[in-house]
Image (cartoon, rainbow, N blue to C red; front, side, top):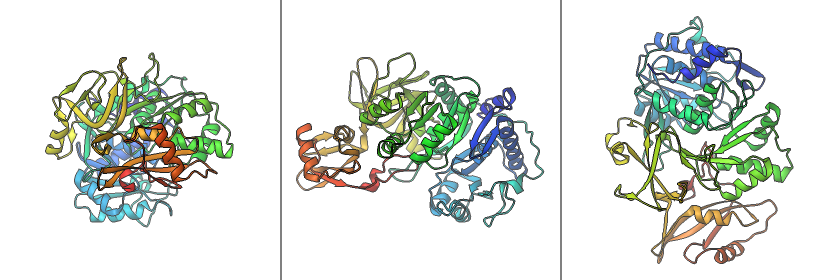
Length: 512
């Protein structure tokens, strides 16, 4: 038997009174999280959910998420976490594509009408039979959208004998962002998720029971937050401080108030906190012991600024939903290198390949391929799409990287984002890194736009630093002096903000 729910059950058994979750004034011990998760499991079994059935969960970073997540796992079912920004049509698609039989959905707020959207998506779905509302008012027994969790749990026992699942049974189906075509569900086994959480946990320094405090700003519906914060944190018996929606001010305030020791985020989160500190003079938290970044390549200037400001380096890692997600990391015992995604983690191999799967020796560049305990079983009900990316246990990522003489990997760019200008290959990240060194550039995103004679032209979308009067001509001329002729952007568009996913990645497809 191997069930991912063990990360909760073991901690609840060994440290029942240890605080697992902090949300506002609530302090929830591990024993209570386990009790409610057991009630959820009993509810699912009572409603006809059986081992291997799929159950969807649409919820921001609230205590409901671990209650329901581990309850689904205890019942032997598969968790299908949904992005909280999905519209009704998209929710129905995810429910039907995953063949989910039930949906637990947060009631929502005026700013995030998730209950309304979830109910509409559920009604459009052909597969889902049960709809449970996670009420915005704590312990509410009624909701305009249907049966609430608390009403459904009334009378349910707080003990449950976890359904025996095997290591290769599917624990979670994580949907890719769908940059091309419809989103696909990556099937991740209990072994995938548990080993990735265990290895992730080992890469962070331990402060001791009651002293490891994580600020959970990464969405738990996303693989990064789910593995490195929720599962790894619960395995460690850490205290998870929940932040439902990332904003730099509240994040910094929680760091100071709760004496947070570990923060994990995407690069734009670090950029936003630094911008807030520099612009408004916010007090720098002093309790932070470690910080990690993933989800996208962190600009080197942000890495330098954060370490200088917080006194803590950001250790970069790399992974994808299809790899549970962590595949490489700047690991303890080896010197970290700025701009590098580090070495493959324990039990994982990485190499560079060409478009025909041939191995590339030396520094590359080439496409990253990954093999190990973290690689998904495949895309749910998509054998052809699975065959395109999996071969002999190797998963091809679509990410282009180089490798130095010490074996460290460096992301160059997404293969699909590469710009071909006049026959020359231009990697947007390289251009972005140079632009970020300009003292009046706060954030930059670069992509190719159609051009009659060159095929593609290089365009930069730029957020200026506060008070900057930088013009397009100024920046183009500066870039011309700092980059090769075929690399520098000829077009610059200044913006107040850039479109981002719920996880903080810049949405280049929207810029296009």
